[in-house]
Amino acid sequence: MTSDPTRALFDAVLRPHRSLGPRGFLVVMCILCTVSFIAGVSFLLLGAWPVLGFFGLDVAIVYLAFRANYAAARLEERLHLTENELTVARVWPSGARRQWRFQPYWLRVELDEPVTDKSQIRLRSHGKSLIVGSFLTPAERREVADALKRALAPLKQG
Image 1 (cartoon, rainbow, N blue to C red):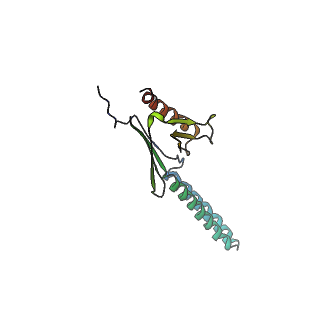
Image 2: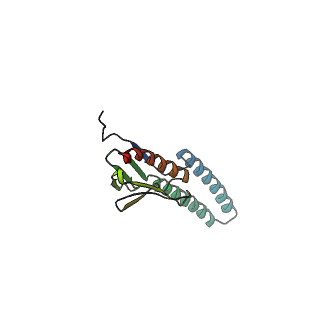
Image 3: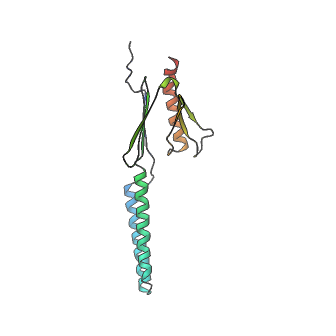
């Protein structure tokens, strides 16, 4: 029986997690707008009309912060392992793309111990090193590193 060198032995797409979805964002912004409007009108009726503009400014800043957060969430890393190579493709929020290739036999997957928020998954081979999944939670880093090590193990045995 012959093996297929193009068959994927491991394929994962890593993306940053955002706990607030589009619907939740809409709800938060509606509540914030309502509270800011009521508070602003209250100050307006008391004669402090300039305060109304600051409430609008607060809403605009919160909106822009959320939009920046959602834009940063478009980062994506794809790890694709075949018998011949591990390809890591990273796509930044701007759309820029970069690829790295590693020969699986020599590849080492390292995860800093103990696994904390500052731990990193490092792929090392032939003097090259690449950190992947820096945006993942510690549990997700452990899961990805272990799964990649399991997928690499049969290739290293020959």
